[in-house]
Each structure stands twice: as C-alpha cells, then as structure tokens.
Length: 344
Image 1 (tube, helix red, strand yellow):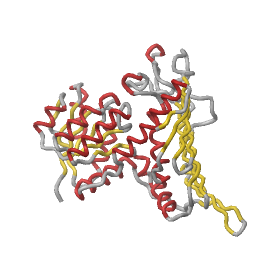
Image 2 (image 1 turned 135 degrees about the horizontal axis):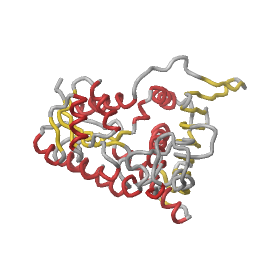
Image 3 (image 1 turned 180 degrees about the vertical axis):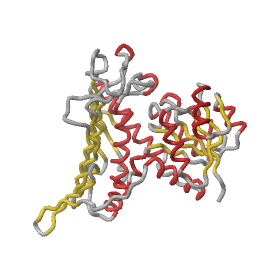
Image 4 (image 1 turned 30 degrees about the vertical axis):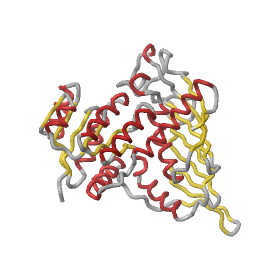
C-alpha cells in the first residue's frame, strides 16, 4: 500500500481534529504543516511529530510531493489554497463549509474537475455510525418517499468567544453557515439529494450585540459582531418535498437540539436519538437500535477519503454536494435580506 503524504494548511482547532483522524488512518503520513502564524505551525508540528513547517502554502505545495492536503483555515481562506493544491495535482479535504459562498465553491469544484482530483468537504455528520445505519434503512425503503424534513442545529448559549466566527467578512455568516451546514448536509444526504427549487428564510441578531450575555464559550466583543445568532429557513424541492432548517448559537430554548427529523410515506425517523416510527397491523411502533457502533466521524471520513484516493474516487463528500448546501444557505441569507423567496 502506497503511503499517502499529507500537508495541513491552517493549524487551528479543527486542524487538530483532522490530525487525530490522520493518526488513526492506515497508510497516511502527515509531512508538512502550514500556517501564517509560524509559532502556531511549529507548535502543531511538535505536537504531532510533523517534520516540515511552512508559513506559505504555495511554497509547501512546490517543495513537498503531497498526495493530499487538509485546508483547515477560516472560511474566507478556503478557496485560494484549495484551488492552488488542486492545480498542483493534490487531492483536497476542505473543512466545512465549502467556501464563503456558492460563487467561490463553484470555482473550487471546477478546479477539481479540471485537475481530475478529489475535492472532499469535511461534513462529517454523514459518518456518525447511527446516521450510517439510518441511511441503509432509507435505501431499503423503510421510510418510503420522504416528503418533509425538519433540521435543527440549536444551541441555547454557544456563541464562539474565539477565532473569527462572529465576523461576516471572515466566516460568511453565523450559526447557519457554521453548524446549520452540518445538519443540512446530513438531511440532504439522507433524502438522496433531491433538487431544491426555492428558499425562503430569515436571520436574527438578538444576543450578539448585547453586553453581559451569559457566555459559556468565552466572551466576544459585541462591537465586532456582524453575523446572525439565529436563522430559520424553508426549502422546496422539485419532487414536492419540503425542508425546514433552524440554527442558533443563542436562543431562549429549553436545551440544545441537534437533530434531523424525517417524515415519509412508510415511516419516519429522527437522528438524535436514532429512532424510526412505523405503523404495523394498525399498531404504532417506535423502533430503536439495541446497539450502535462507536466511531469518530472525522476519522471515518478521512479513512473513506484515503480509500477513495487509492481507488480513483469518488469523494466521500463530493464538492458538488457541499456546493448545493451552500447555494441553499446563500438563498436563506438573501431571502432574509430582501424579504422575498429566492429561486435556485
């Protein structure tokens, strides 16, 4: 088995999760770490025994013979290093969301197609074992035709007090693009990726610009807060299905909710906890698995990506599918701004 040589671009918190995944993937060696903050790159290299350190990803791509790079930068810096790596003939695992917006994401997908390289996006919720189980049941027809889905990524209080999450110019948005993206991708994957035709929604900033808000995830500067702290939207699909999406970093709710609820003609399901809802012989049944395997979803995605690279594709989470997620998010933001439904 050929050892895949990997480079890391961006060495912040999410990069550590990628590195943990690479550590537990057979036939993979991380050989270079790159960050514009040299000290951060050196600390990461020391922690994970990475031999080479860079502050310029272009130099890293030129000097290192890489098979794969992880792009683990803030959202504003996803596109440029991804395109550069693809042009250099290197496969890419880009952290979610694919980019700041669909325009940038489309450029990335086009670069991957032209280079004939894999562009995989770090939407790891697909690889949670329970979600993998549910997908198998859906494919076997247990839910029938899925016609309505409710997607929730809700924190009662969880505004990030670190990094650039609260800055629209660096992140593209707030909880909708940060955590809503995960659950929306999971929902579309479970649905089989029907074609969306229109989006409507709204976004709210209720807590971000206030002082003295309970901040268990660290304090932030309200003067620099330029994103929403809650958003909601509705998507219509060409096959007649409808999806609603709610995402918050802060809201007056009882507790955090991280769930996809699906309703089909032959049954329903929820992801957290994993359950299916059926009718048999005029009896309503709630079906729960007796056992769900234990696995780390980021590691499972990286293992799937390594297999895909060796097999010549396809990507476990193709850039085109992540691009559709971002098109929907763009539509919700635009609808919130204009007060109108947005056609896709």
